[in-house]
Amino acid sequence: FTFTNTGTSPLVVENAKGSCGCTVPQWPKEPISPGEIGEIVVEYKPGKQKGSQRKTITVTANTEPRDTRITISAVVEEVPE
Image 1 (cartoon, rainbow, N blue to C red):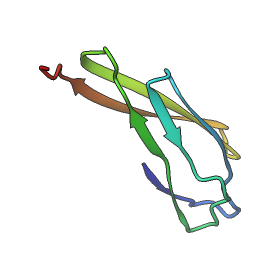
Image 2: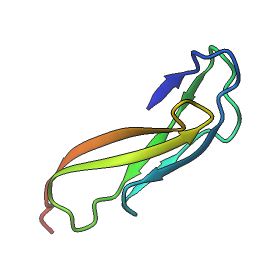
Image 3: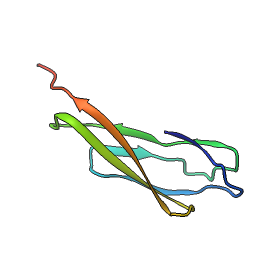
């Protein structure tokens, strides 16, 4: 997920948390200046999950509101061995 800081002060992403252990986000640790672009990378490892999946990532930042939710969705097919 890429985003642009459209505010007038540096954007600080304090945390990003997946809705389960199979959804692991990585977020920028440095402040993003106004007009700059940042990126949150989400890795999804479905394990034994199959079929239609929808996962939520909660991003906490110095924004109003503090929490923003982003979602990913996938259709997980079993790979024959």
